[in-house]
Length: 259
Ligand code: CAA
Image 1 (cartoon, protein in one colour):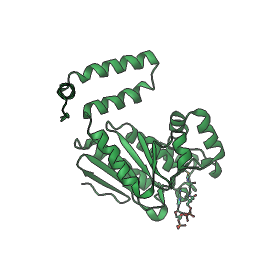
Image 2 (tube, helix red, strand yellow; image 1 turned 90 degrees about the vertical axis):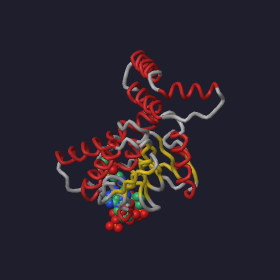
Image 3 (tube, rainbow, N blue to C red; image 1 turned 45 degrees about the horizontal axis):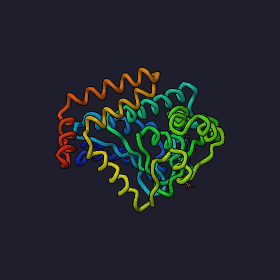
Image 4 (cartoon, rainbow, N blue to C red; image 1 turned 135 degrees about the vertical axis):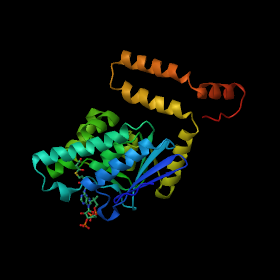
């Protein structure tokens, strides 16, 4: 398995786990961390055994406390734009993986940290999760996708409120607005993520991938085109052995074993 300086990557039994591993800096995202995340995601994309990606932050205090403010403090406008582009390219790589991703949010997920969680398909938080976009309080704006992905996930009005006020929300409020899919006690976070991973891994892998494609690509299209895309992908499932496996198992009242 590839080695990285600032992140850990483990691929085991179909589950890729990416851990941002800079706990002393609350896993803040420097250019070096972004480059390591990007390279690690390339490894995951190329590993055909990986069926789900889990993203975590090392330590018990933060998922990721944002882009590295010390590094950003000296940037010129052009360097700022390049830094934003590097973050966006990296997080889009995560969002565009064929396989589903789950962010396990323990503690602070602020700024770029919230944006990293937003790039995942699903977010499971512990009761200590604190999410927010504090950028306007630093004289900048969210730059790793927050203005776009937060708006798409919680709606434009809520995203504007959170971004304009820099308000940090607790786990229960994040759950209520759909920013977190689920909230569990700290000591149950790992098990809750594992349970979600197992539930996904029990399904036909090609169908999970096609569902993600239909949702993510469809949302960018006019409804009629999106429904046509869904029909095309639906049809394609019948060319895969897993359709016969799944439906035969249902009819025979047995559990399917998917390819
Ligand atoms: N960048 C760089 N270093 C950071 C950091 C960040 N975003 N967040 C925390 N750290 C560092 C601190 O500087 C500190 O390091 P030192 O010990 O060397 O001083 C260490 O992590 C521990 O942090 P604190 O002492 O501040 O811990 P705390 O418990 O008192 O506070 C916190 C925790 C509320 C999360 C606080 O660290 C904080 O407010 N962090 C910044 C959060 C933030 O504003 N994030 C958004 C950044 S902008 C962005 O992300 C832009 C974008 O969209 C691309």
